[in-house]
Length: 250
Image 1 (cartoon, helix red, strand yellow):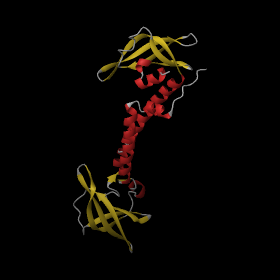
Image 2 (cartoon, helix red, strand yellow):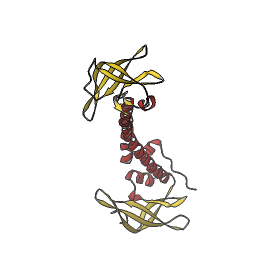
Image 3 (cartoon, rainbow, N blue to C red):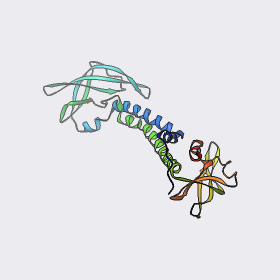
Image 4 (spheres, rainbow, N blue to C red):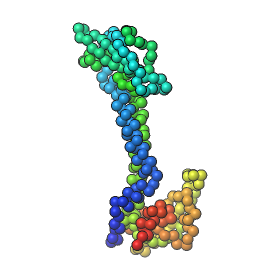
């Protein structure tokens, strides 16, 4: 049984952050979470749960109108403060909109929750500066970051396993097959190579790369394979330099 190579946590972090996906993913995820949290707190997620189409409407009076430090489609958002009465009880509330025609003292139509008259909004306006859709759309940024971190973690896990448990040997590049994918205007190739594992069995594996000049330039290419699953093999020249150094270090 091959003794696993020991790696300090610094080396493991180095493998994880050795790909741009990891750095960009962290940036998108952290900044996106802050961005989403800000917009979520300023978005109207309450109205769909508080109000129904059949809720009562009552006349109210606009008390104050103030611009807020936000805009939608280059239109300033305003906060409207208003008063209204339901029976003998007096209430006040606030709503948000880009609508600019109403001014203090104007009559407004107020919608309130039938089971809680204190819950209200000016008909057609929001309870927060932004709509729920705007708040949800901002979640795309942390979602992109999470996906990038997921793929970076999968890559890291694969390389960590090969660094710790991989068997070094050499093999021969059998063929290169062009694909329809291009990276930096270079065609991505599937490079097939053959090697013999420690038990004498010949295996064939494949790596994809757009940098193939060094893949097959030697009669015997150095590679590493998973002893428990030899088909999981990678040519050393197709790996990041930092990981190659970990594998070949004494």
